[in-house]
Image 1 (cartoon, one colour):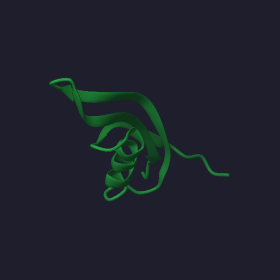
Image 2 (spheres, rainbow, N blue to C red):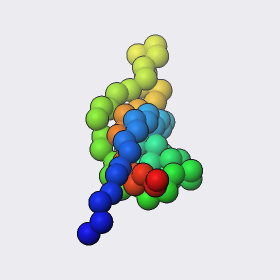
Image 3 (tube, rainbow, N blue to C red):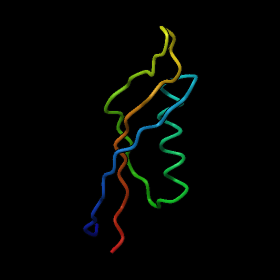
Image 4 (tube, one colour):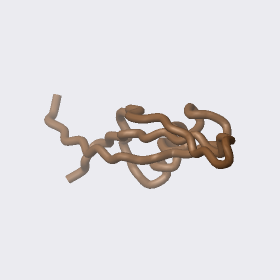
Length: 69
């Protein structure tokens, strides 16, 4: 097994439907420009609220990918 280096970034995904979709949106959007995604970890879940109504679900996600050097 060769040595590898991984970079970790933090993203916030949003959805009007669910936290799961918010996390999925963050990962799938990142996958369009990043290669070798490895692990996604949900760090925090919250909601955007206005006038007593939930407008959006948000998921803060740490995402790691293999660092190519």
